[in-house]
Length: 178
Ligand code: ZN
Image (cartoon, rainbow, N blue to C red; front, side):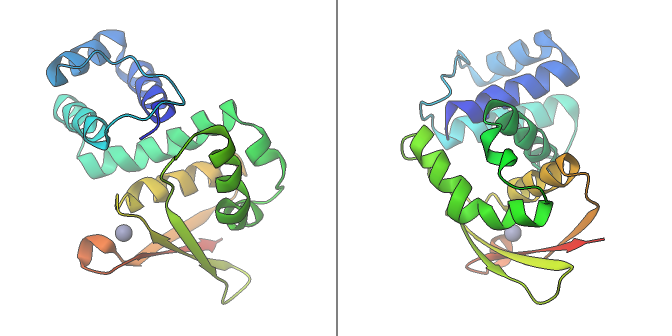
């Protein structure tokens, strides 16, 4: 996972719980916690931090990962405003993630290990995003979508009827625009 993801996690914890809490979480994981945005760090380190934050705050890891996804959208779009300036609607933005945004991300960061998205549109007010990633971070993807919805000031609901955590080889994230 790229250092920028750890940078945003650190920002979120410091905003919500303070610097002392972040330092205690790093100590609990016995890690230094210095992350360079473009460098890669082991996924296990991120999951370990999430586990420690969950233990400290008594927030279930899944809830935490979803909330982090929302905050991650904000952190990434503030750092790279070009990603959101190209699209004026949430639906346009979501549809640009795979073919436009991920290509731009690959120019910025070496081997970012991005998930794969396929799209299906059955009706004007829904967009199916089919998620595939060996990391199975579909809850993080849901959070990122909610973060984007907040940015575009668009009310949505997300259904997640097919999930890799329930034995499927992909996740279906159905975004309904209200
Ligand atoms: Zn899933």
